[in-house]
Length: 317
Image (cartoon, rainbow, N blue to C red; front, side):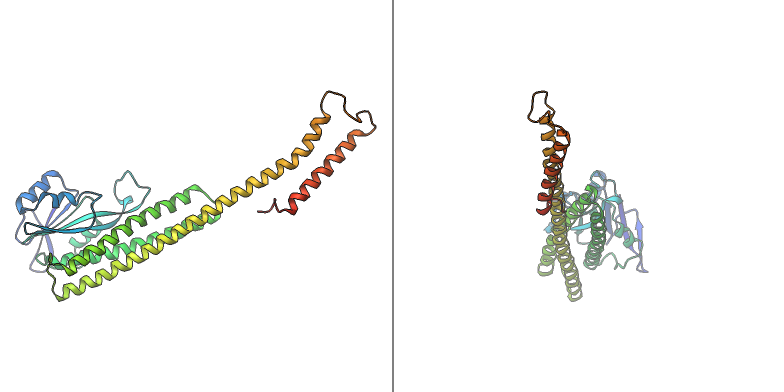
């Protein structure tokens, strides 16, 4: 889908059907024909458009033929989109921001809710010719989105931990595992986003005035905070998973130890019973009340074995 936006004299955005001067083009899951149309109309390098659609593309900034490409990573909820890998709910997805001399292009392979809010006027934007300020606004919104996603992940970790404390089920362990994978995606993306923004701040690809530099400093602080929170959550989650893994392993060992103790205790009367159950002559078989003597011996030996295991705490959990 190709959306062409132009700011009006009232400062609002309106969609147009043709690419005009100082337009903002937004592509969501674009078709090949839409990419070719934008490439031909604006002279943008083809890989600037296609690289942003690659799920494996890393955050970076590149300048070529008067156009500047900035690839950032945006957090998104996979439950909001059709995906074959929905076990990992939260991931990051590349988004391209391209500056040409007179136009701005944003491109992503999925629909991003905050971009819809931007163009609907629910979030603050500048006029379309102010490419740098609009880019910084997108970066600021992205930084806040990371913080919101991290807060959601923290709540889900707490809920899974509470459920896991009640019963050691595989579903909760898998939930923690998938949340940990989400944190891996985010910590990797945030680290590369920090490096990319520092290049913007200290480089010359995108010209920044004093206000722009101040806004970018604030965005860097937000990204750095999100990165640190993500690292803390990832370390905490790894510790939780290790702790519960050890608890589960310890419980399994205790159960096996208990079963082994009962097996040894029961083997004593079974051994005596099997000896006196053989169809051959055995000592004292004609002695009066030998049956009860054997029973008493079995009880005494069983009780002695039980007492020994009890003193060694083999029955404790």
